[in-house]
Image 1 (cartoon, rainbow, N blue to C red):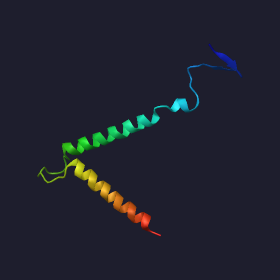
Image 2: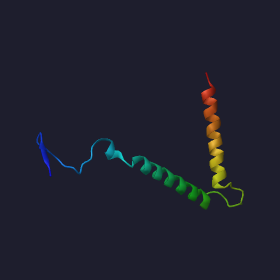
Image 3: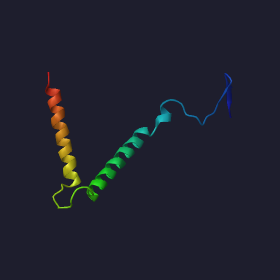
Image 4: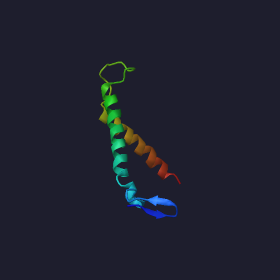
Length: 81
């Protein structure tokens, strides 16, 4: 079933408006989480350029340290006049 309107054919299979974007946020979350898992897996496997002396921190410790550093810099910037 097609409707002829202004020289174009409109079909029921082409959704319009907000329904077309359904599931986009879930897809973005999946991509971000997958990237984070890959990064953590690579870090957990070890850096081939760094000597293996057993003193490297775990990926979770590195993530917490990075978040603390970002928060420190962020709080400093918002405290400026």
